[in-house]
Image 1 (tube, rainbow, N blue to C red):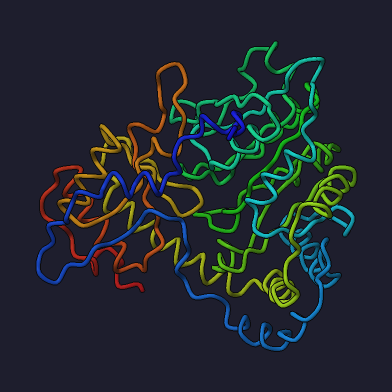
Image 2 (cartoon, one colour):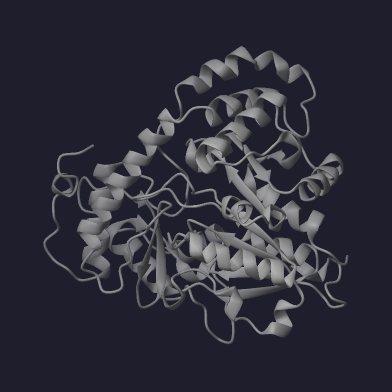
Length: 410
């Protein structure tokens, strides 16, 4: 039986690779210590209290087919949030609800990437390291995925403008994640203006993955659609966001895309044939969540506390970079796989090797010398885990008590 070659070079997904990497290790834990898993970006803060009530009130609507593009109440709630957050006036014809953003980030390439760009095979730009669906989307449309370093040397964001002009001539789509997964870097307004200007000059679309937009250290990150709209070029951006991180509802699988009328029309058209609409109870819960900010502010405060913990525990580690947003630490090590094995063996802590989130280009994998740590546990456990991690990976004795790490908070 023949299988398509376009997916044949995909590496094994990160988490099965990690299980195989650690499968022969039994952690050496002290009495009273338990394993701590800090690998997957699954929020563990409390979900909003109103979720159960709204879900129960609308459970009877499971007997009905849901609206594919989103019920009016949900589209209005998303539009209201975009107005409050970014000052954007985005009508329903510029919005589409999604089963989480991974669906949208994939299907947007199917709907919007042309078969040829300037008479050539199209290219899709991908920051390296990156959220892995970007590369799969490029493979699905048989575009060339161009992995562009997003390293400390580039501010942990891709420098797309530095690419060869001949390559830029055939770029159809550029993915951008801000705050970045895994590095926590935030694309500032100047960066976004340069990127939008480049997209206009070279005639490509920006797919802005902004799932971590509501988790930030000091100031809310600007949005790509916000900046493009201020420049008079809103059709250059399709932005994606969801309730997974913002509202601690990853299992709800509820997100949205916003962009120009023509772009959303084409995405909706494809989804009519190949997409699964959100169940109506989910849409009603989603509308309530986008309309409420109190639970978001409370959750953000918990993440900001964990930023402070990480800074105190790891701030003197050479190469440590304070994340400006998101909930990951991107920690420098000599070898990510070796460090993950050592940390699991000696401290019972699971982290993800950075190479599993990156691709090798010209013999270099930019994630090789990093591990990703998810700050999803509570403050006390985060302090204890990072102290154990520091003492194993950075050979610093004398762990500071977790209570000291929180300054009495949490």
